[in-house]
Length: 474
Image (cartoon, rainbow, N blue to C red; front, side, top):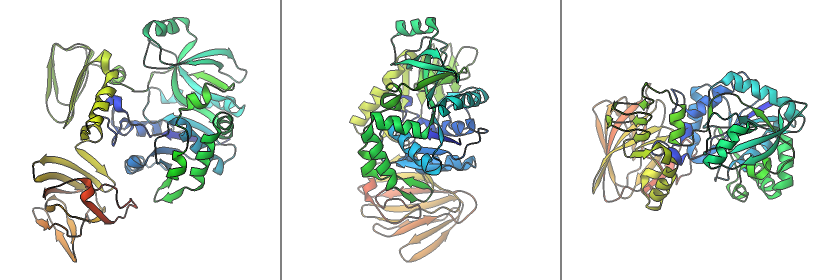
C-alpha cells in the first residue's frame, strides 16, 4: 500500500494578525526558523517513501506555495480550492485524486501550519499507524497534554486495539479551564492534533455514508477539473456546492472506525500568539524576541519587530508585534480576541486585514512606500527571467526608475532597454509590459500619478502565468 501525504495549506490564520493575513497566511511564514511552516511540514515527510504528495491550497496562494516548494526541490501535485469549504471536502478531493493513481492509497493528512518538534518520532508514529489504516481504521494522532490547554480539542481513548493504538471513545470541543485540568489529571484524554492516517477508499466510503452530497460535489469538481500550468484547478461551481465541514465533524466524530495513536512529542497548532510564545526559544526572562528589540524589565512576553526598533519597559505576559503598517499589543491571555479585531478591520474594509504592504506575485513582489492625494510610490522587484502582464491603465500614468539590474520595457510599439539609474515614462492609456532579462533581481521605483489607483484600473491584455485577465497585478 503506497503512502500519499496530503498537506492542507488553505487556511487564513487570522489569529496571528498582523503577521498572518488573508493574502499571506501563517503557513507561508517562517515563524519558527528559516523555513516556512509549509516547508517544515514538507521536510517532516522526508524519508517516509511517499508515492506522491498532494498539496491543497487556495488560488490566491498558488504561486507562493509553488515557489516555496520549488525552493526545496519538492515535486508535488498542487490542487487549487476555488472556495474555502473546510477540511472534509479537501480530504475528499485528495482521497479521490489518490485513488485515481492507486486504489489502495493510504493518506497521511497534515495541516501545513503546525509545529512538530521530533520529526523522527512523527515518522515512527505514521509507520505505526499503517497496520491500523490497512485494517480499515481512520487513525488520528493524539498528543499527550503537558498543560490544561483550553485552545485545543481533546480525544478520549477507549480500549486498546490488536493492531496497536486505541479506539476513540469520543471527541471533545475546546473545554473550559477546569475541564481541561480534569482531562490532564485523568490521563486518558489527549490533544486532538488534526493529523490523520487513513485509506483513501475507506474515508471516501465513510463520507459517502455520512455526507453523500459532499462526495458527489467533490467527485464532480475533480471530474471536470483542468490542468493550469503546474496546478490542478477544481471546477469552481461544482466544488462550491459541497457542504462546508471539518473532517472531524463530517466523519471522525460519527464513524465507529476511529482509532488514535499517541504522538509523544512537543506539538502546537500555532493557533495564537500565545501558542507561538509557547513554541519559541525563550531568553533568561522567558521572552521570545524577533528583530530589533530592546527590553527593560520585561518577562514572559513575545516581542516581534519587523521594520524598526521596538522597545518595551515593565511588561509581563504580553504580545507586541510590529509590522510595516500595523502594531498589535495584547495580554497573552487575551490573544484569542485578535480574530475579533480582524473582523472589525474587514467590516471597515481596511486593507491591513487582507494584505501586507509587500505583495507577492509570480514574477516577484511590490511594496507600497508612500501615497498621497494624486500619487502612489511602489518598490518593485522582478525576479530573473520573469515578466509582468501586458497591461494598460485609464486613470494613471507611471514613471519607472531602475535602481538595480536591467529592464526590458514594452511601451506601445517600442521595446526599450533600461539599465541602472535610467528611467522611463508610461503615459496614461499606453499598453506596457516590464521584463527582467538579467541574472539578478530587477529593482525599480514606480511613481504613479493620477486621480485613481484601484486594482480595477489595471486592464490586463496578456499574461504568461495563465492568470485570469481580471486578476490583480502591480
